[in-house]
Length: 401
Image 1 (cartoon, rainbow, N blue to C red):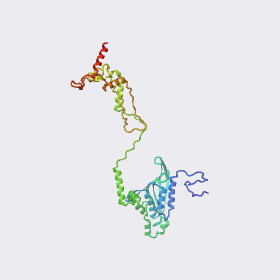
Image 2 (tube, one colour):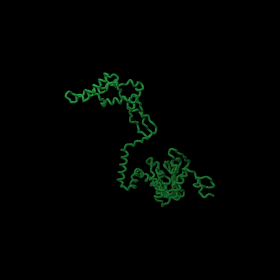
Image 3 (spheres, rainbow, N blue to C red):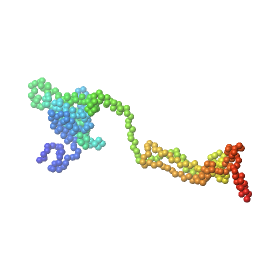
Image 4 (cartoon, helix red, strand yellow):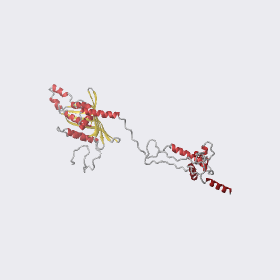
């Protein structure tokens, strides 16, 4: 014989006679069966710590509990959070209930891969409560129960119980005792619950309508030990900041793909000059054509020596490297600058040196200073330097020979 309670539920440990281990995911129905057993193990000495431990074991940290039913004044719907759930179960027993259990019939299970949760949907769920005051009564509350469990810990995320009807049952022996007393029978005929809920539980649900929005205030008071007025001011100020603050801009993800850059103005001009060089030879370019009255050669002033011929200017093709830009982002480590190299085929080193010497006034002939105002008639520099006439005569003799 196996040392365990017989029942339809799977064992929680390895059994040699069965030959299989406990499944990794506990069935939702068995989880609700464990909740019933824990409620039956409650004692009169169970304090707040016991109820908090009960809620922590079976309910998720962000769980919600919804109860819907219809009273004489219309339909009601109450939703409470995880903090108020332990107190709800405790008020059931404070209203005269001695035993509480949930019975499921023809339940359906479904797994939601998006939320990683298991949903238990039971169209015919019965909440059975046994009351000891004012008389022994069994109340059966029928409705639809929808539970959502987390897969990792199999704790309840959402509890939704919609009550359709309830029945209150009295023992036949109790009714037979009071058959001769009409007042006692009338007292026994009165309902002890409303839609299966005791008056203590209904009053607590009405109070939860006020307590649920104040959870933030109570939590702040418990954490920072502030006065209720200061807690309210702090919460209102933080909500006002969230309303006034602009929405945060989404962070831009840097991509490693190469983007096509638009050519800058400098590189466009360089490309145009390169195309012109390919189309026209270098001999077609002359500075004289750019000067009014030019003859195709540079027309220097009187300081240029005769016989030097035409001096070709330095070409105007200059390599320009523009600052690279990228629309919509900045350069990364993989981005590179594209530099185009242009060969200057019109550059002549000799001609450039001669032109530079002429520009710097390196010529030493007398004609270079002919137009100088310092050589006027009254200037001591107007005459020729000593030895200049002898040098001129020697030059004439050489020409005559």
